[in-house]
Length: 318
Image 1 (tube, rainbow, N blue to C red):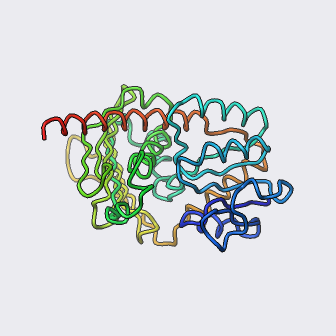
Image 2: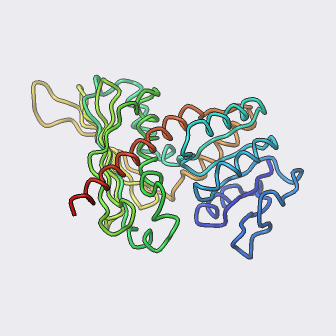
Image 3: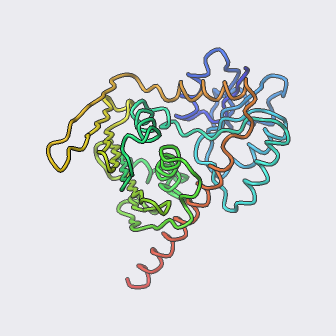
């Protein structure tokens, strides 16, 4: 499969690395080393698929062109649009043209999270009572120095979208975000929020999520409390060791039986995600993620709207 990479930034370089021999060329209007300035300049017979790693504002037009040309697309998350109708129309065209349009949420391929998903699927926790996720890094200053990152949907798209996706990935179903509530939205060092807390529910249990650019040590934690025990994930492979701890409940009470799994390896997620995308293209699994894109887009827009209301309310009292 011949693949082009649109966007010669950090994510684009990762995508190019894992395309391997499939890689054809870079497309970027701002980088001299890129082979083409725009995707419209690349001859259509040179490629079958594209990895799109551009700012959110450019995605809809670029993906629309690619799908119209019957090219497969691996899109850097999130696939955000101010209005749902734009996504719906594009996904309709994707199915009509028999293309794969896959939005990449690479954390789905973290070994610890795959193990957690399997445990949930096998009902090893019994009835789930509550889930909490925290995802933080210390990039507040870098975000402030980037006009396109410190604007628009900001942290809601960059980190929040991962937490939204993991909610649906781990627990299944597409009824998670009809009543999503933003509990906190704060601008500590940036123009747009750099610390948020929100929760959502499927009417059986609640998932609480916290995302921040002001965590001075890169941190990811997942805690799931259940009837038969609890699961605890700490860290991603990209930061070093990643662990999953399974605490089996002792009745009526007592010290749990603890089983720990750990992974110390280079980040496998980008490689595994591209392999997954390529298999979908080869097996003609068309438009696998349209509901996920629509649900996450709805949730992001709802959270951003709630955040703007909170900011206006605060401003009125200053």
